[in-house]
Image 1: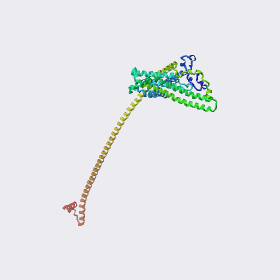
Image 2: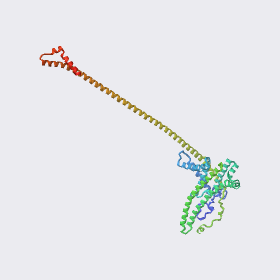
Image 3: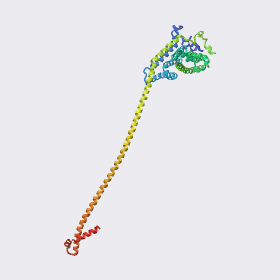
Image 4: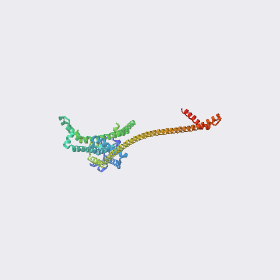
Amino acid sequence: MITQPGFLASEFPPGVDVFDYKSLIPSLEGSMWGGAFTKLSLLVWMAVAIVIIFFLVTYRNPTLVPTKKQWLAESVYGVVRNNIATDIIGPQGVRFAPYLATIFCFVFVTNLWSIVPFAQISPNSHLAFPVVLAVLTWFVYIGLGIKKHGVLGYLKHSTVQPGVPWWVHPILVPIEFLSNLILRPITLAVRLFANMFAGHMILLVFTLGGVALWNAGPLLLKPAALGSWAFAIVMTLFELFILSLQAYVFTLLSATYFQSSIADEH
Amino acid sequence: MYIAQEAPGAPAEHAEYNVLGVPLAEVIVGLIAFGVLLFVLTKFVFPRMESMFQQRVEAIEGGLVKAEKAQAEAAALLSQYKAQLAEARTEAARIRDEARADAEGIRTDVLAKAREESDRIIAAGREQLAGERASIVRELRTEMGSLAVSLAGKIVGESLEDEARRRGTVERALADLETAGAR
């Protein structure tokens, strides 16, 4: 079994078991609470601590003319507030900005662990963490819809498309119901999870593939190993792009769902 | 291939890990961690940022108002200065015109006075001349009488003076001379 990144050379085609992290507290291993104390959970806590410390330190003494650090913190919140919340939801989107900004920071920093040396795994490559965020967003937008339109009103609002011939409704309403009320949190969670899972897999393939090629024996394969590692570096940069994009997309889609719930019409 | 040789058969227990599993422990960790983050950020950070944004907006708007006021003030001052300048210009022109008129007046005065003075001097000179001429004429008249009488006496050889005085010959001759001179 695998415990830490020390396993590399012996396991070339990396299997899904590389995502099976054991409890850092050995006595809990095997119990249901083992999962709460793995490396991934530790990384989640560290991400939370980093984000909190970042914001508390940079915003300890805010001034009207911002310092560089303060500007950085403000622009993180400002981008989510102005370019996501206000742009998509409208002026009243400002009240969702704190939630959306928190989602963005949480997803971004937990994603970032996937390319940070020695961490090199994102907690979001375990489905449980994206599911938590997606379900929270789901609750929020369903709650918003019910508050705005009432239970039946919201059901109608989100399933019945206006301007459609009556005989299409029997087909369209179940599809809309499924896609708007059931599948949204699932796609939201799986999109983030699958991206981070696949990203980790790709990095492992190129890194471990390089190790396997290097150890393979024939001198001819050594340059191929170097090429494989070089490509691992390229893919790390690509992963940086993907993880930022996923954090942005998750936030953006959450905002879009909120907007669809509080919209007056489609 | 080599790879297959290098990677010895994977242990059988690999299949146990479920990729799509959602362990409750991780869900709880995720919920608490995210909840803590959400609480701290929405309670202590983002509201302060919002108030800071608001303050900044107010500061900028206040600055704009102030700048507008200053601009209006400057414009008012400028028009005031312009008006004052125009006033000063017309005043200066007026003073110049006045001075020119004054100078003209003074010039004519002085000229008139000078002419008067010269006239007066000329008149006085003429008067004096006339007086002198008259006195010379008078002198000449008396002298001429006596000279003529004495000359005639010398010629005749006897003193005609008494005779001449007696008969008034000289006076008559002179009167004749005078009327001849006046004609």
